[in-house]
Length: 163
Image (cartoon, rainbow, N blue to C red; front, side):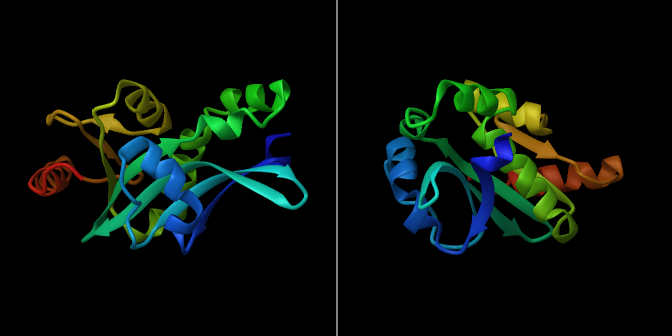
C-alpha cells in the first residue's frame, strides 16, 4: 500500500528539505517563498527521504506551478516492489501535482505551468494540465470558467514569461 511509505505534504521550509534535489536539477536553490510540496519516502520509522519537490506560487487569481524535480537516489533506496507501486501511481511529481491541485483549489481560478522538458510534460498532462496556444505554457482548469475568462488568464500569465 503506497500510503504506508509515500506521502506528499506542504512544508514551510522547502529549501531545508529539497535544496539538494533542486540544485541537482536546476543548479540553484529553490524559491524562498511559499508553497513548497515535497514527496517523502519513509525508509524506516525514523528516516524520511525527499523524493521530489514542486513549488506553487500565487499570482493574483491563479497559481503558478514549477520547479518540479525528482531525485533518483531516493528510488535506489526502495525495494523493487515499492518502486513499482510508485511508478504505478503515476510517480512522485504526478502525486505532488494532484495533491497541490486539491490543496489550493479553493484559493484560485486556475493553475499554470511552464514546461519545456519532454518527460515533465508527460507527467503534467497526465495530472490534468493542458496545452495553451503559447509554447510551453500549460493550464489546469479545476472549475468551470468561461472561455473568454480562460483566454484572459492565459494572456495574463503568458505576459510574465517563463516562470
